[in-house]
Length: 171
Image (cartoon, rainbow, N blue to C red; front, side):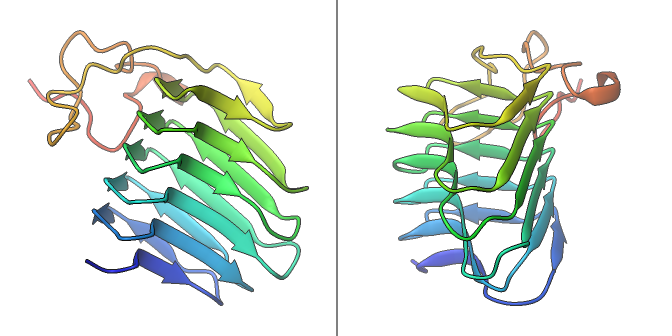
């Protein structure tokens, strides 16, 4: 397997519909002077981190929107670099062995309209929180199919009333 599903060391790319499964380190790793915008992404089964944001240049950004981050070793989303901005919106972060969302630096950090559940510590570090929940998202299968079921509490939980995460319920 690859060390990273996606590595960003410079620039400001965006990715829509990106999937990383089983990376040997982090599903997504951002460092150096990199910034990243992820939308509708699935990151699962990585050994250490789902998303690791550790830029060495201040002022960088990480935006995670409508993503599903599940069972990635110790951390779902972690910031541990120079101060930047991290925004988590309409996302689901579940089943990590240490912390779901971990702010471990001076970044401005917000988690809104998201579901962070079943991590020994769901949220750690100072961050702005709004309209979140901590409930079993009721995936079709937490080991493979992370699509929401019809009775998932993550249905209609996103800003504007849509479903949280990358894989909404489909009738």
